[in-house]
Length: 259
Image (cartoon, rainbow, N blue to C red; front, side):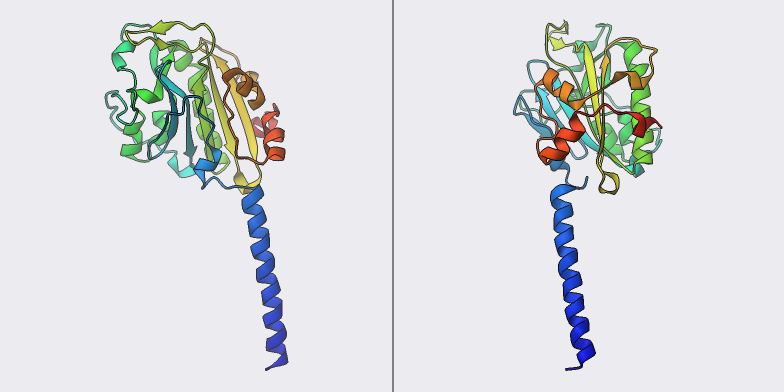
């Protein structure tokens, strides 16, 4: 055997072994956004519904999702000007999602949790956001104001960070008003959590916003995920390694996002 070939083979073997080892470490400690199930929260209702482009946990007592989670890729951000369909009940919800007529003359908007504007890359993905399992009663000034600004900012960050994982829902705890014949609960607060695993470096930010008109800056509503977990009873990232989860979920630093 040629001695140069022998040592080249040995060297290549060490390099390959090293790469495999490092790759396994990256998978264990830096899960990529390709594995969406890895980032799903726990469900307090055990009724998880998986659509093609978003997943939700349906709360039958509240007649809405306690959370909706989805990936927002950079190339999803498009303005396709699709025609808005009618809201319909979600055929995948075993207990049946609320009828849209509960919102009629209630004074509240049918507020999307996964925004239709986040899914304009595909007509089917867009239409799926009009299931009533994906809406919640929102004050019109909130829906068209501070919440809309946060949704637009989320799309901006999705482009800037080459994709995000998004979790959104209303806080379904406490004494709440209800609307319609099915008693759809009206959350007093809505939350949104954004996770960026860009370049294998996790970055997280969370918001808790009152369901009312507001002229405040978005960053004034930044809270820790720990706070949201204590309010909702949901474990939002149960599969993250404890050291990563603990560090991210106590964080309230917003400057890496806004500046």
